[in-house]
Length: 309
Image 1 (cartoon, helix red, strand yellow):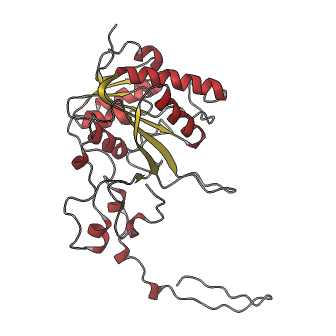
Image 2 (tube, helix red, strand yellow; image 1 turned 60 degrees about the vertical axis):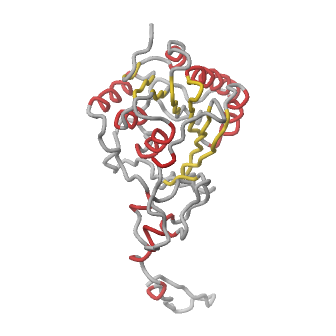
Image 3 (cartoon, one colour; image 1 turned 60 degrees about the horizontal axis):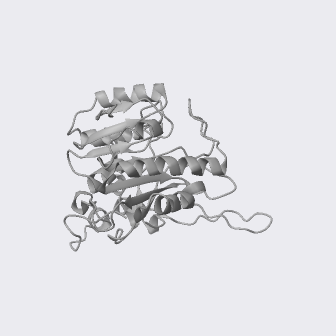
């Protein structure tokens, strides 16, 4: 039976993908289980190494078959299997990597004995290296020249998003260059208005919105084989795209359908389009003259303590 569009199908994605007409999808975005022991309600996230890669190859090849000749496939994955999945996408699926984007987020899990993780890998693959959709003018963001420094040399239409270490994005004097690839979005934390509250791995709508606007056009088909909280489909609906989603969990599917039922095409995406825009300007922060050392009484080692004023 053909797969109905604009809805969430409660079934294993492998069964659902087999029912999709080949070469009918314009854009696929997948945020699969990372195989790190996350507690899903119906999925075991602790497969053996070989088993996980075998399963990953299977579903990614199935997604690839649904793509149109000029189709695009994005995959989100953590550090543990990023290299392996990239090779599978290239070798098993025969796709071409356009970008290896790093999603840098705030509010990462704090670690005690290593650098706290604050990123996810986003692989941008296409079927044809010379024939694909990339609407670069639809995803421009304000530059630091505009936001922080009021520099008249700033391009009025902003810059393309970008891929490097970002300590304080609002302090970048030149912003990122058009060929860069690290994106700054906050995770959707528990206190955020955007938070759905019933799924622990919710992505921000603005991140999916950027991908959907760049790699598809209105009226085209967007596929998500792991619907989860429904963010991909929510962003697709708001941006006037058709969509198909698969979800094993009855609860997740139910809540995702409810979320989609409260959305109309043309509704604004949740969250800030550019995180730098919502960050405080350096010009309104403390100046160096306000950061003065205070000399405390020396301790037994005759050390000095300096505090911020």
